[in-house]
Image 1 (cartoon, one colour):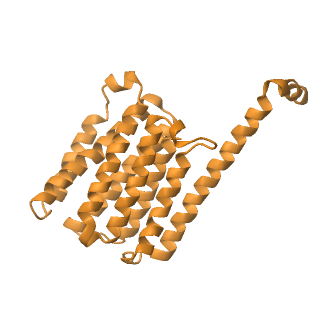
Image 2: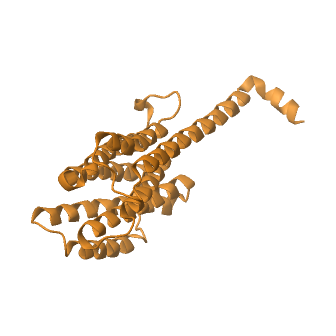
Image 3: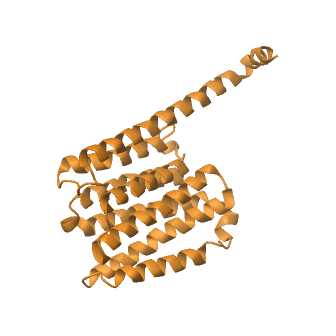
Length: 248
């Protein structure tokens, strides 16, 4: 019976659709593998759990490559960038802009503020993307997670800000923290409404971003954290992967 069914469907394109769907899954698997391999290369060469990555352009390139692979991951096969939805385009822009922040943070002592600003722009892209992914009922809905994020944002910022030096830096940290928690809150709202695997990936990805950047702030200004760089990069790559998956 299955053979006869497949034969009857030859005229309406069903096998072709099955084939295309299967090829899409294979392509996404290969893109995921590319991201995993590039991430493993970065960890193997730069050894972030052992040392801070060397201040070289090569180390910066190795750090950026996994993020570039995720930008390609979002692109559907046989489609141009202009064929993506507005939300998907913003995710791609956010990933590419994030990679510029990655490059700056190789020289964290001298280019920390430019790196922070690049990541701020990236989070604006992510915030707009998650906002556009939500349908009208979500935009008007009250999220049960909002109070939790407000408390977490105030508590984390207050803990870090007590030791942040200078006049400008505390304001930059507050601005960046608001963006970071807003992105995670908005991704959580999307998951609360859609309850899909992709929305869950986006939610978990943004929470992982919170963890990664909180480690940066605590390690830099409050107290040293053992294996900080390895923990930062592990949670960071998981974060970007989750955000990329949410846009596919």
